[in-house]
Amino acid sequence: MAIGAVLEGNQARLAKAMRQLATTLQTTSDEGIQRDYSYQQHGAQIYNGGYGESFFNVALVWAYACEGSPFQFIDADKQQLLNYFEQGTLWMTHGRQFDFNVCGRSVAKPYLEKRDYHRNLAFQAQRLQSLAPHKRNQLESIRRFYEGFEAYPYQGFKVFWRSDYCSQVSAHYSVTVKANSCRTEPIEQGNQENLKGGWLGFGSMNITVTGKEYHNIFPYWDWRFIPGVTAPAVERAPKEWGQSSSYALGGWSERWAFWRDDL
Image (cartoon, rainbow, N blue to C red; front, side):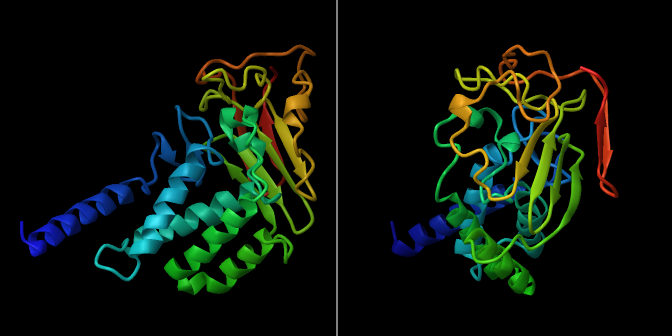
């Protein structure tokens, strides 16, 4: 086969692959990126720090590699990557790691806390500068935050209403809360992982100042007493692969407000 034909075939395959990859950036009411930039997998279950992490790392690598070529993402897709990072990831990584509330059953994995993961987050911010030069200054501040050279660059309160999760952030601290409702599925067990985390998501709270508050705590945690949860002092196994709840929950971002009915 002629070299030209081979190259043409490879280009066609790459173009098709990039088009298929771009479809994963669309907001959806099914699994994937939600309208509030939470990421759901295995039903309506928040997973920005698990499956969402894997998705974003792949999409960003290819977007960065193909920038400036005939295969680059269109502007709307590059903006979607930026939105996912700024309006999703950044609100969940004040401690330069993902909040355990958005990691699903990975909370039971020994490598949940990746000591050098802040470098990956910084690298993501750096790569996004090439895709969104109009946000270069803001992304550089974010990169320096993840590298430990600057304080957290934003402050505010956000309700991820699609996933029953909220985050209060500032330069000095963050407070996040994960709840469950009839709209979402609670943090799951599966593959024999997270067998004791049945109270996760029932108002579980993560308070971060230094980012080291929960370092290596999970193997030693008393799973009857998850921070923020008011519940009977018994261990509770999660439903395998999640299961919908049956109570109401709501919140808004104008003030510190997040509520649900009794257990």
